[in-house]
Length: 139
Length: 155
Image (cartoon, rainbow over all chains, first blue to last red; front, side, top):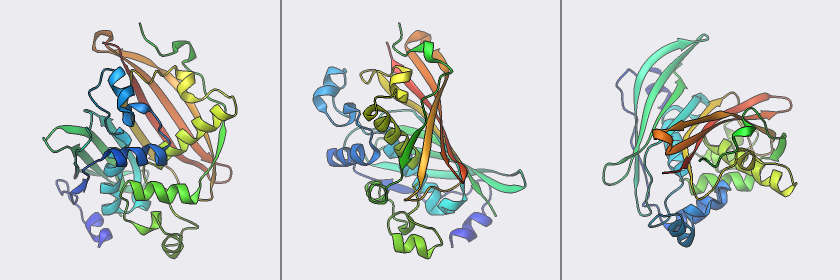
């Protein structure tokens, strides 16, 4: 079923939406551990306040992981050729991240047919927290 | 005035060898909500033709952090130190992966980060470090190339 969608995908087709959250402090503690990103700005409110923030905020990479899942759930991880993102806004504690993707191009490169996908992550109030792109093999 | 160590533009970290641990990879996959069993179950991964559980799309960042920790433990200079990152001001600007071959639990990979250079933005309110990390395998060559911009908020 995954393969049918990918092989026949047209420009403008949307990938199934993916939701992650609400992101709790526990999620951030666990993600700090499993990602080995121990930057205290994500897990220690005292540190965050000293750095001028009101509270800790989620790791951008936790949301990028969701963009990755959005693409690989649809295309299969073995077909993912590249994934990139720009972090455009902070993700606060308590947010639910909604990821969406749309096929923007179908082209051939080095003998392989590829789909370019535009990706976006948004939080509850509509703020776009990440924008991104992925390339997946189309055949 | 910035905080990055701009004199280190063009320099690379020493190669660090990292073991891709099965339990750590599975725990990562569970924490990010990964549902595909090839990332969570050895049996499912092997059933799909993989030697072991498969690294999720952003796992290169974890191996990069593992290399940073191992370098610190060994008394070597890690990428964040080389670039002069200050956690009080640090933001993650961009992250990009080019995938050349899959990473599986049980792999032993080599991680090298090169500091490509530095730029400024927003009238000096932001300084940006551009990094490139190559994750390679002794026999299978390049696995993933990571490009990353780190930002210091100065304003």
